[in-house]
Length: 122
Image (cartoon, rainbow, N blue to C red; front, side, top):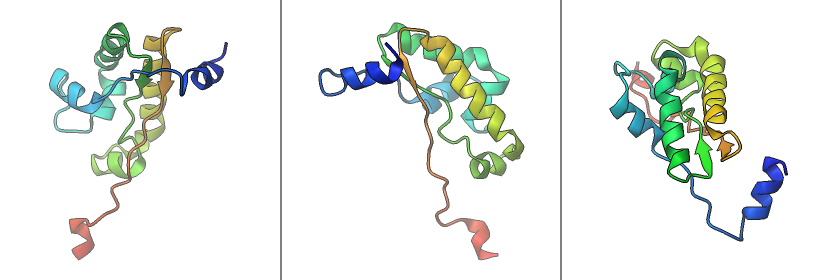
């Protein structure tokens, strides 16, 4: 059965447990040097994979990718805007490696953060 069919079969019939708080957990476990946790997909992939493995081993049926803030604007603020594709691809790959056949992988995409910014005032 493909993942999409498995998901549709499970929705509405059972509770699906998923991973969460990846950014918070990674910030505690790995050295981000104050930068975005999503860059760990490239710089410390073992730390990201280890967290996914821990969630899977704890019974998570859904692994959420470490890509919440992996967009050009957010990464650009940290001088990493040109690495958007690589960060997202690595985030998905790491979650898939950990998931294997035991869990589904869902991509995480956060807001662009286009609200009030200090540089708007000149």
